[in-house]
Image (tube, rainbow, N blue to C red; front, side):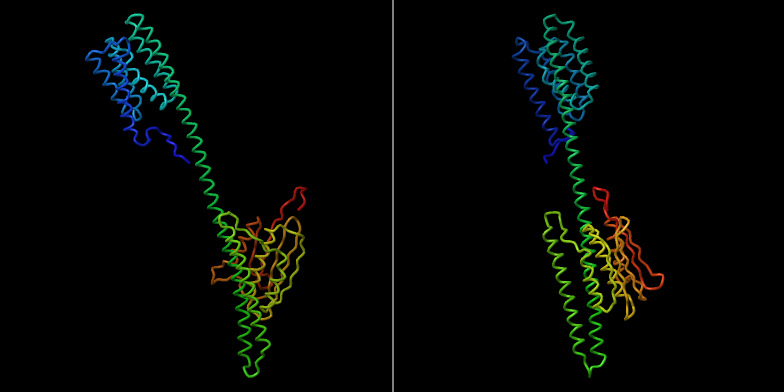
Length: 395
């Protein structure tokens, strides 16, 4: 967007340009004094006044009213001495235009009226023919004032457009930064859920293999060891696939502003339950819910994933039972995950990011989540995820 100068005084090289303008008006005034008005040339004092009134124009943008006052103070005696009346016109018009374009319309009109009154008072003692010529000059003065007022309004209009455009641009940048922050948070949650879940399972499966190897080295249960190692390999393959999918989605979203790919949903809950069973937990899964929006399904999936991960990691017992229930009703999807373990449910080594992430998942779809020790021991996670209303008012 091209730069717009809202204040003429802030224009680059303003003083230099005004000095050149003053020189131009001086040349124009000199030419008019020599060749206009029947060649009636000013006397020595007239030339001095004529050239002197060009000098204040150098500061016309900084001090428009004082410059106009000085110009008028020099023009009045110039005309009173009956010098060439056309010569001061360029400098006078420039000073008037500057006042009109920089000041308020009311002040401009009052200033113009005052100048007309002063000019009439000076010109009335002259002969009638010259007074009639001065009337034409007054018409030009009025035209210059109205042109200056019009330019001032135009500049204000352009400035308002530019300001709105800049404000809109700032809003777009802030929105872009907000979306980037939200995407970073989403990716962080996804990676946490994926890696924490996988690392927990691998850790449990590795412990099982190590236990089998150390329990009775002379009567090694090769089948159990092979199964534990196969489970570890399968878990790693699954995690690698999910990680690759996440990275591919991020790469495809670069430059498009869309980093959201296919979302996990309720259909993936049996796989989560199976992986927890492989880790040694007994998982009871019950899902009684119709089709839910992808965002709600993804939030429920991640909440269950993290809850299972915490249960396996902190359950603190070999025969751990985890009950997972999801059911819809009363305009919401309810998620309940309880276990009969003895752990606290929150990973203090990670600062509790798991529970924080679950709550953020719930809030992302307008829901709530409550987590803490169960009434009969163990740990519980309860989430309520609102379901949107369709056009017919049915959820």
